[in-house]
Image 1 (cartoon, rainbow, N blue to C red):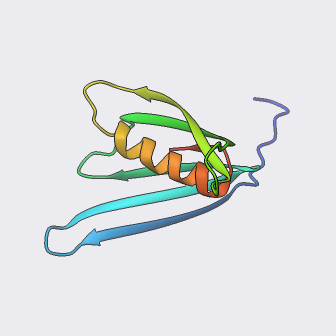
Image 2 (cartoon, rainbow, N blue to C red; image 1 turned 60 degrees about the vertical axis):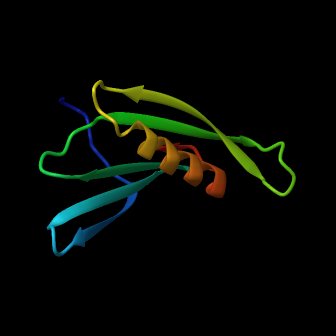
Length: 102
């Protein structure tokens, strides 16, 4: 659009893990968006979005644990990635005390 200026100030990192015998791989890219984290995980023959999980840290009621997480989930049927995405988002939000999207 005329008059618009695009600036990026996101800190991001990426990693790739490959199983040499099978050639299967998994990639992850993480971006810090202010105080929050956005993590994209992919692999396989055809990358796609099968699920999105937003985990918000909330003070824990468990002794010795600072944070628990409340999750909101969007899944595109028939994809099965929700449990993987929920686990990653929950663990990151609880460990870091930051809103996390996977």
